[in-house]
Image (tube, rainbow, N blue to C red; front, top):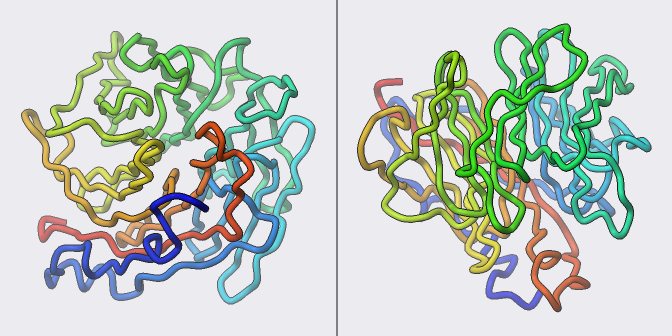
Length: 330
């Protein structure tokens, strides 16, 4: 690729980007070493990523409905080959209790085809399609988070809102909508994470702002988080075991993809933005273990969004594993 980011920069040594570990952090991350893994040939533009308790990884692709699986000690394999109604996997969330792998299949970079934007679920036991739910015309899902009771929450990126599907319901409904979660580019509400049973955090990919939403209130309230700067295309988010918010800065224009950490995201006032890693190429999604080990998908999709660079397809794609810094309070 012809950008300032190179493979060497993408493999930037984590030790230079992470703060010194504390004893609490070191103990929590004993089994999480910094590493990366290359996806098999033909697996382009990874996005959705989920991890089972036994260490099995699932990875979805932006421009294909294929879902890959890697069991511990085994090679990558096709878990789900895609379908007419599953043509992308821009988010993956695993509900192990119910045996479901939820995914988002939006008509993004469709190549001239017009297809309904959908949310789907796969049966973990055999990789078959459990359900595929079309979203209303004009609505496009971005990211997914699951409640403890099986409720599915989806960021609706075009109109700027949160969709909800409770157990037993046949279709998604709009939980909340606000112009602050939309963006002129058409890519607004993106990353989503539950901070607790009352508050969720939501990122606006287009405006660079983060919000909290009191999603369980009868009239949910949206509050902007005070940040020292705008985040360049905040994308996937996750919650660390110590309660810190982990945010992926996609960096479409600059090419400076980063992994950010926000301590105490529920607190009022100005928040800190800690850079855990930089030199990445469009990091888009992540999953975090209860011990604080993060697995991040680096999509390298930036060239598809920059005029004149559409044909510069990278020759390989990677996932990154890294230990998160954890406070002693954890």
